[in-house]
Amino acid sequence: MRKIVHIQAGQCGNQIGPKFWEVISDENGIDPTGTYHRDSQLQLTVWYNEATGGKYVPHAILVVLEPGTMDFVRSGPFGQIFRPDNFGFGQSGTGNNWV
Image (tube, rainbow, N blue to C red; front, side):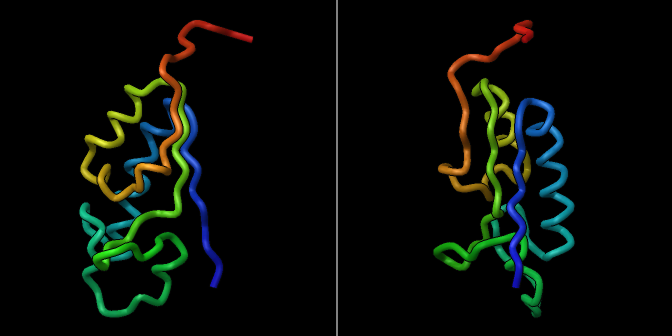
């Protein structure tokens, strides 16, 4: 079965991404703690890996240059389903810097 890796990049991607995971989790029977609540796991591994304790974590990479955006993701309703090593962020943003 194929797997999909979801990439959230930048402030916009990481502010829209939590809603995406809320919808995908609802469609697949995953609650905000990563617990599965249905009978058939037919398509579950397309979006998730099973972790220890029977919890499911998304195939996701989250990248942004400012840590405040990751705080927004982590504090959201589905923020705890991501593995900590899926987050990549800098220590300061690039506000008003244009190339």
